[in-house]
Image (cartoon, rainbow, N blue to C red):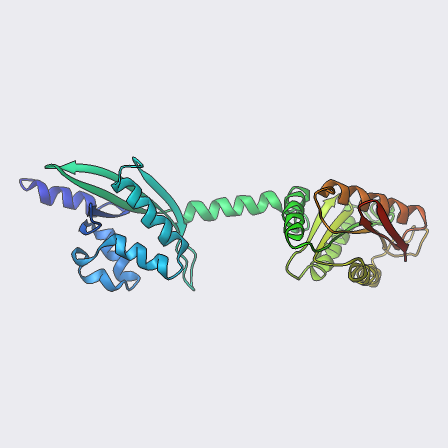
Length: 316
């Protein structure tokens, strides 16, 4: 093409990324077709004439409105303009009521005729982000029951422990073991065993609905429930109700020496996190209590409140 400016514009307009060029004051000097189209599709007020827009003012306005990423974008652009940073990248969400979207904003400088300009590009990375989230979900979920797995449980327990520590509130942990599950597997087959695990997992979800509540498959026929901000008395009531609902499933287990259907045992502990206790203390104590429940006949809850150098125990 003879007209190099038209040639370059056609190239930039063919790029899927939204691109704008600003000057040192933040005034927009150029936008490509993708930028203009995105503005029109999303009803941006400036979509009709971007040359009248100061992009730094847009970011500052978003920041004043409480947009965290608007504030980060504005600060990042200024850092490149001020030459405190050579480049700036920011991944951010841009969700609507109808869809979730993510973008990466990149800012890079260039000079022309002794003037300094800055290229701002926005790349849609929604497809990658959704794929990452799908992989992350699979990595944190038990393949059979679709509740959290042990890895996710450990991570979430640490998070909830720190939250309870910060507000000086108790956290209760229940470790649940299905009584004589091997007998069920041996008698009815592994498919029945899998169906049993799925049914119990569905029940557990009903007992982990509040903020700070989490249920997980702990391993094999063991499960765990975290009840944050929950005292032992409250957790005992929940545990007893859970045991009863497991019984009410009436999953046949005719060779069980307890009753001819599936039951469970629970080790339950309450701790108020402090600088002495750790999550491993909570888990170890719940495991010990589960052992006590199983040794004393199963089909019951063995519980304990742990206070540094003090413990209050009960069985029911």
